Length: 74
Image 1 (spheres, rainbow, N blue to C red):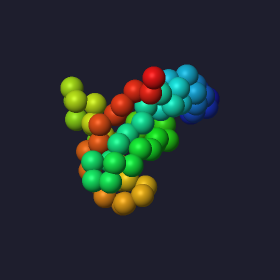
Image 2: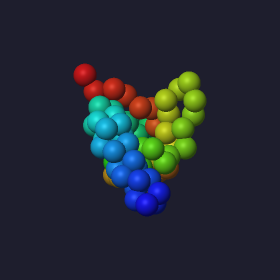
Image 3: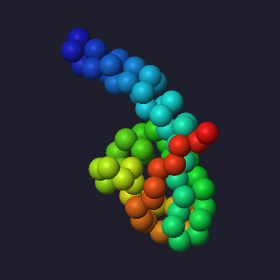
Image 4: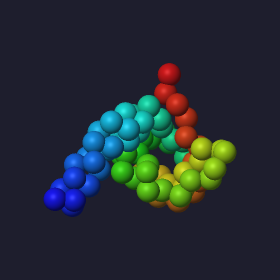
């Protein structure tokens, strides 16, 4: 029963917090200037530098793995 409750809680957290948050932000690769969005799960599990909102991600176009700045879409 506890396992089922924890699964439901994880799904609710994903739907309520992570999915809308990931839709609002995009990242720019410093080497090729490609603009891309990341899935909510990947965004929550990446290495983040505090106070700078940078995530260590792999660019889908050039393949370089680097710290990329998170930019809010307006």
